[in-house]
Length: 206
Image 1: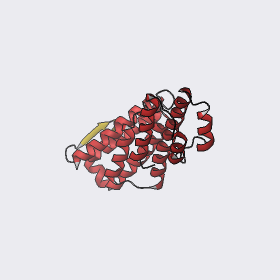
Image 2: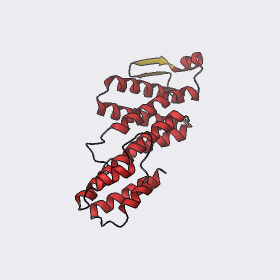
Image 3: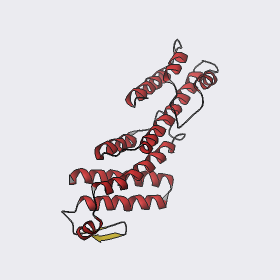
Image 4: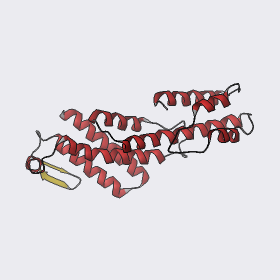
């Protein structure tokens, strides 16, 4: 159990530092580091009598006895961190990286972490959906622009009128987009992006 908990804490620590550091959110990064330190501290009760990290020092065994810490306490620490990271990831690098160059590895790790420690809640699911939805819109938008630039005039306008506008609440209707693309001659770049879009929808069950 300790080994798994250490991995959980380490992922939370690295993800928090990366996301908040990237966004220049120093205060939030400090809070996340401290919370991750606490998580790791409680995960290693059998190994340490004292723990120091991010300004936190306590005699852990005494603290556990006094606070009656349980796995639910750890979940309460992890839940807001995962939600905050997902929120930041949803907005990070949307225009600078390009929709099809963006890695979703951190999202996958956070989602896997949620499953492994048994975190539930509609708020978490909403955060995950917001991330997936907005990046699906970005991919559709970028692909539409490439299709238009390859010779299909006004395809971006046609796509926007048929699909609607960007939204964190709902993903674009892939069936409508398939109908728009059907019969078009796509160049190699557009073909690769179209396949990547369909793979994204299949992987995340959009």
